[in-house]
Image (cartoon, rainbow, N blue to C red; front, side, top):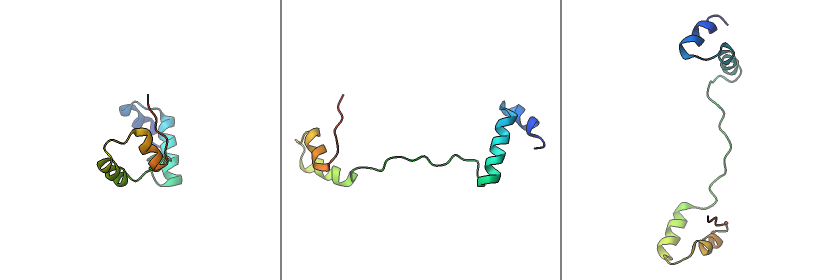
Length: 74
Protein backbone atom coordinates (compact mmCIF):
# COMPACT_ATOMS: atom_id res chain seq x y z
CA UNK A 1 0.00 0.00 0.00
CA UNK A 2 2.43 2.59 -1.22
CA UNK A 3 1.63 6.19 -0.38
CA UNK A 4 -1.12 5.53 2.17
CA UNK A 5 0.77 7.49 4.83
CA UNK A 6 1.16 10.47 2.52
CA UNK A 7 -2.44 10.30 1.39
CA UNK A 8 -3.75 10.19 4.95
CA UNK A 9 -2.07 13.42 6.06
CA UNK A 10 -3.92 16.06 4.00
CA UNK A 11 -7.29 14.50 4.85
CA UNK A 12 -6.41 13.87 8.50
CA UNK A 13 -7.52 10.25 8.38
CA UNK A 14 -5.73 7.15 9.57
CA UNK A 15 -3.62 4.91 7.37
CA UNK A 16 -5.83 2.02 8.47
CA UNK A 17 -8.91 3.81 7.07
CA UNK A 18 -7.20 4.08 3.69
CA UNK A 19 -6.36 0.38 3.95
CA UNK A 20 -10.01 -0.49 4.64
CA UNK A 21 -11.21 1.58 1.68
CA UNK A 22 -8.56 0.04 -0.55
CA UNK A 23 -9.63 -3.50 0.45
CA UNK A 24 -13.29 -2.61 -0.07
CA UNK A 25 -12.53 -1.31 -3.55
CA UNK A 26 -10.55 -4.43 -4.47
CA UNK A 27 -13.29 -6.74 -3.16
CA UNK A 28 -16.41 -4.87 -4.27
CA UNK A 29 -15.20 -2.47 -6.94
CA UNK A 30 -16.59 0.57 -5.13
CA UNK A 31 -15.92 2.87 -2.20
CA UNK A 32 -19.50 3.77 -1.39
CA UNK A 33 -21.43 2.07 1.42
CA UNK A 34 -24.00 -0.58 0.61
CA UNK A 35 -27.59 0.51 0.42
CA UNK A 36 -29.28 0.02 3.74
CA UNK A 37 -32.58 -1.69 3.96
CA UNK A 38 -35.58 0.38 4.65
CA UNK A 39 -39.25 -0.15 4.86
CA UNK A 40 -41.30 0.20 1.76
CA UNK A 41 -44.12 2.69 1.73
CA UNK A 42 -47.10 1.09 3.41
CA UNK A 43 -49.68 3.08 1.51
CA UNK A 44 -50.04 4.50 -1.97
CA UNK A 45 -49.54 8.26 -1.59
CA UNK A 46 -51.76 9.08 -4.57
CA UNK A 47 -54.62 7.07 -3.05
CA UNK A 48 -54.06 8.82 0.29
CA UNK A 49 -54.18 12.23 -1.38
CA UNK A 50 -57.37 11.30 -3.20
CA UNK A 51 -58.93 9.98 0.03
CA UNK A 52 -58.07 13.20 1.89
CA UNK A 53 -59.57 15.34 -0.86
CA UNK A 54 -62.78 13.31 -0.86
CA UNK A 55 -63.05 12.97 2.94
CA UNK A 56 -61.70 16.18 4.40
CA UNK A 57 -63.44 15.60 7.72
CA UNK A 58 -62.06 12.06 8.19
CA UNK A 59 -60.04 11.59 11.36
CA UNK A 60 -56.47 10.34 11.35
CA UNK A 61 -57.57 7.20 13.16
CA UNK A 62 -60.29 6.46 10.59
CA UNK A 63 -57.97 7.10 7.63
CA UNK A 64 -55.37 4.79 9.19
CA UNK A 65 -58.01 2.07 9.49
CA UNK A 66 -59.03 2.71 5.87
CA UNK A 67 -55.45 2.05 4.72
CA UNK A 68 -54.72 -0.78 7.15
CA UNK A 69 -51.96 1.01 9.08
CA UNK A 70 -51.56 2.33 12.63
CA UNK A 71 -51.79 6.01 13.40
CA UNK A 72 -49.19 7.36 15.78
CA UNK A 73 -49.99 10.51 17.68
CA UNK A 74 -47.89 12.27 20.26
